[in-house]
Image (cartoon, rainbow, N blue to C red; front, side, top):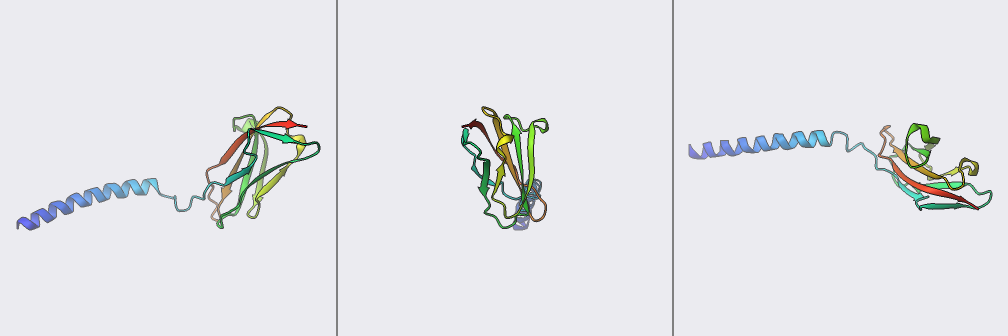
Length: 138
């Protein structure tokens, strides 16, 4: 009888700990298996970008995952990524790993921030990757 009581107490403790852990895991990782990984930026990632005469600015990133429907590229004037500062938004296909931004879009001495979001085949969006840079025109 003593063994049965001890086993019941251990079982109750295990079940209470398990249900607590299951609740935490469930609420934390509800869609984590579907969330695509944020893209890795290649260029520009420097503080300063020098644009030679008549050359565009090429944004590039690693396109290294299979489950990708496309990307959303946004460019903002300044450091703040607010809708009022948005100067460019492009939805790019799954095979894209770069985008050519026209030179006249950028002003000499101005700071810009670009962001990139990966969209999975299921339509889920990743966290955005972003970087700020200052334009110097030559």
